[in-house]
Amino acid sequence: MIPKGIGPRLALVALALGAVALFSEPHRGPFVKLDARELGMIVDSEVDHVTPAELAAWIVEGRSDYRLLDLRSPEEYASYHIPGAENVQSPQLAGYPLLPGEKIVVYSQGGIHAAQGWMLLRALGFQGVYTLFGGLDGWTDEVLYPAPPPGDDPKARARFERAAAVAAFFGGQPRAQAGEAAATSQPVLPKLAPPAAGPVVPAAPRGKKREGC
Amino acid sequence: MNAPLYKYGLFGDEMSLVIAFVIGIGFGFFLERAGFGSARKLVSQFYLNDMSVFKVMFSAIVTAMLGVTYLGWMGVLDVDLVYLVPTWYAPQVVGGLLLGVGFVVGGYCPGTSVAALSTGRVDAMAYALGIFAGTIVYGEGYPAIKDFVNSDARGALTLPEALNLPWGVVVFTVVLIAVGGFYGATLVERRFGGAK
Image (cartoon, rainbow over all chains, first blue to last red; front, side):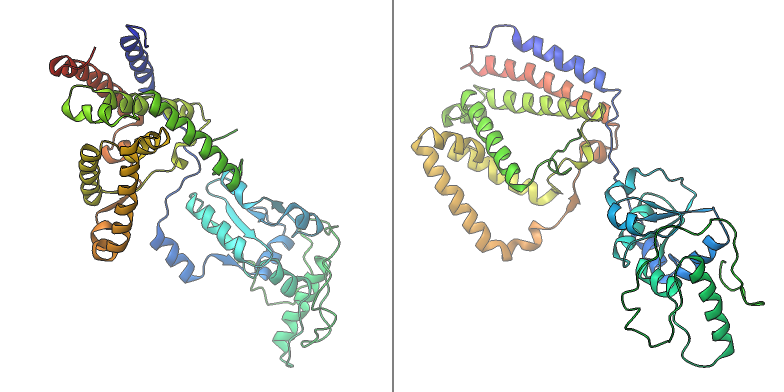
């Protein structure tokens, strides 16, 4: 049977542990609270993304006031990533070293993981979070292999020439025709030898400097 | 290594069942060893001549609470990830009263009835049939009481949140209540006899 006097002793132990525990503050994991309405309004107002063209302009201009996060697998990242991107997987986002005020652009292959990562980072309190519109697919279509405009509009033509220069900068090339599909439906991503970083501004058509906000 | 182990993916579904089985066996074993396989002993609680149920429950609560607190303090356990049964005030008060009545009448609570069943007690078998019958009645009657069952929802609530007190203060208070309760329970046992 239980030896006599063990009860009071156990009570004393519990009291001592409880007294010490007065000062305890249990470790909390990456739990967050969401302002669902605020986030809903941000989503609705579509200010939560940057277009591939905007991002390309940032890179071309050599801007360093943002962080670019690639949420794909390390293998996919190794085979190609947008210059300057850091590879981080969704489960690690919570502990990833980011600064509260930083401008953060996340992208994935399509857009779903990026959108989910956007939600995670917003929930963690990062204000300046953006997704890359269209993901890496959009980047491939718009920046690496831009399609020429269908019509003969000179403005559109000028835009395309600028896009072609940007594509060359990133190691891609414009498609021959607007409707061209066979050769570029599965465009080969450029080899990972990013062009010399720095403000190498491609020959941009004069007057039109829309991108880059 | 961080806990909760299952939520952090340290083992999968099958392994979690094996672990649940082992823990369940251990739980049942200690219930039985504490004398909780006997309806007589359990019901004595309600006649105030044996406060073992109170003492065992409260020592389990205090032990688990201190364990969670210290593991959480050391950063080994993420207390926010520990599963909590959500709170519905009114439905749970009614459910608790029903369970209490069943406890006094049947002599067991659901866990102890299984422990008693495994030692071959006939009353526990009758009790287990009662559990099945009650489950069926509840399931079939659910549409009628659905609104009430889902009313007054408070989510997963902890004492520090509900009382808006620091974690450590709640821990120390619960320990004080437990130790005071032990002392009081011993006095009650002396008063109403039956205890050594």
